[in-house]
Length: 447
Image (cartoon, rainbow, N blue to C red; front, side, top):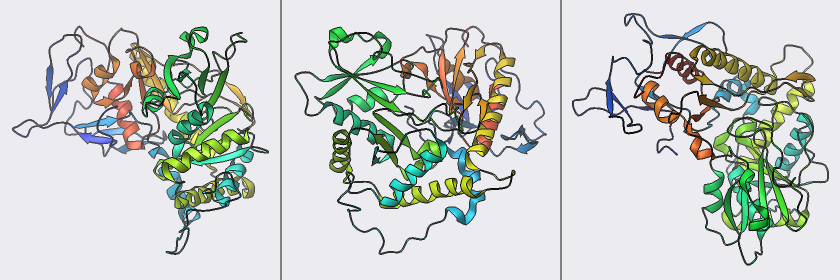
């Protein structure tokens, strides 16, 4: 992961104070230094007339806006920071506002009769209502476990499925390209209960014994719909368990083809509504004992989950659901339709740029019938899985040529000619990204 986590950051300064961009050395090629005003490798001039201010198409496709992003900034599209959602929630105004008194939610305890004694009843009710509204998961007769984001819930699920443990750690696999954080999150604690074993396609369950397969659908990074890979191989001697990461199974990203009903399914507030800063997620679990173990992990690691975050999440989920329940007019700006339209516009514009480049390509996704919208919809993933037709380190090339930071395909168990780029940035950042990407016309010798 790149050490800078801000969405925009300045390029380094020369000792004399003039801005420069250092292009990284690639495959033993010499380091090349580009100074302000230099033409970038394999690009055309972004603004051939310096007297004319840069203007970029707006992210919603309506006219043009003056870009507030300096050409001397590196665009950080490595993380999936969902700042794209901010304008919608600003429009909602006081609907999403909460007033908290100094005496509210002071106790650790919410309800000792619940498996999650630290889960607020309002939060649990809002989660169930949201899934019933969208129709993407079965919640009736299922247990809800709240966690500090999906990262903690992933760890909780691993603990629940492997404790009290055996002679050897249980192998954890996922089909490549898999989410880049799975290896680190699995091995971070160096647990004796489980260990990362890599690509599910290459996993030999006869040689490794019992296993856990993580199914991420729609998949991060490539946006494809996934099913278990190892689980479907005939072998009666080896026991496999599944965890379903459904962070992106929401209407703005993909068609809702069925209410999923898996053993362990977890979701995150970050990608459903865009509120990543609240650090909250939830799991839907069939088995009561597994749910108890997951709740115990959350209790032991963080002694519960912030009640302020739970109530904020419940409030915003209520705003979304009330919109669908109460809106009678055709021009109501409902959350999922608004975000779906925005994602569709962004993907259409990105595909136009990529098709003109002749050196890049993107995955193509089939349309599927969406039960939520009642229409055939094409997926619009939260990340673009960009592929270069040349065998180069695409992360270094894009960073060196147009000052855009993505995440290399190698982190996902794939190839260096792939690059994951976030589609969820602010409008001005996305506009600038497209403008810069459109300047790359060819890859010359030495990049």
